[in-house]
Length: 338
Image 1 (tube, rainbow, N blue to C red):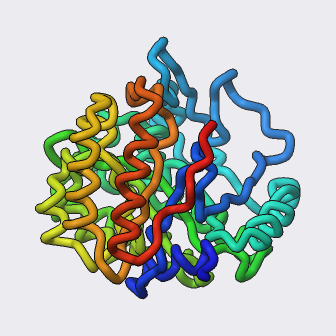
Image 2 (spheres, rainbow, N blue to C red):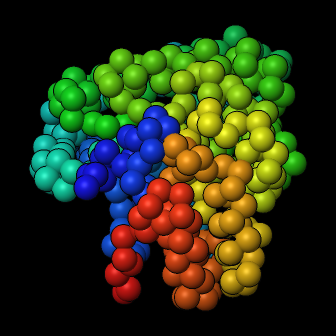
Image 3 (cartoon, helix red, strand yellow):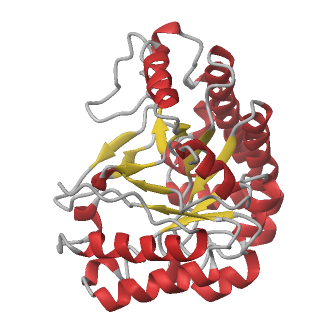
């Protein structure tokens, strides 16, 4: 019987896992574990809702993670004096060893995490509209900003992997890149500006033997090619209907592992079981591969996406479990109901 870690690795490498990898903590079923890091010792936020980068978050009555409204580098001339996070302090890592030990004990695929890895961090620091404009009219400033962010992220990667060599299985990270119609920039611009910078980050992760798992929302059909060339092992795409399930499968199936579920905008909020079944059927036909290439993963925030039917996710879980049995010979772990 394969361990959780082996199941995920085999799926990522198209080496035929014995079932679909799964990440559904709400049902007590996950092949993954995550390690915790703490903030810098003595960190004092610049505002009550500021993060360690100095970005100030705001929320409305709508339940979600909120949005950055305070951008500490809206004036890019302050870049040289801006205090980017440093990750050398021992105090950041006091809880990591115990989390890694538990992950090893459970034989799970252990992930480090980076929130807002590059593009999102750029516009969190400098403002969304300002970042898009300055990518065109002040490219040198945006190159300097991007490279400083990359230096900070690689500093984190080397500190974690250097302190705990061989203990991490991979890194997961977020960078939303699309609207409902297309990516925010052209593919050619993305490849020219962002591709080499992402590759530096992914190369640092791969140099420590870690797989690269990326989340990105929106219709990023063209950018998927760039991610693959840069070295991404898995893409978390939670709006498969917006992307076009058949189109994405035709272009990329077998070249990257997809992490997904029934569409979080067009399907799950409706509570329509037939739609959920159709999403599962098409995703497993066009995105999954008999050798692997698919991870079934929860969104994790039902209220934020408007899922009111408590039973719809269990129905979805059963649908994907049946496909796991059909493709790989075994169902998903039996869900533990809350």
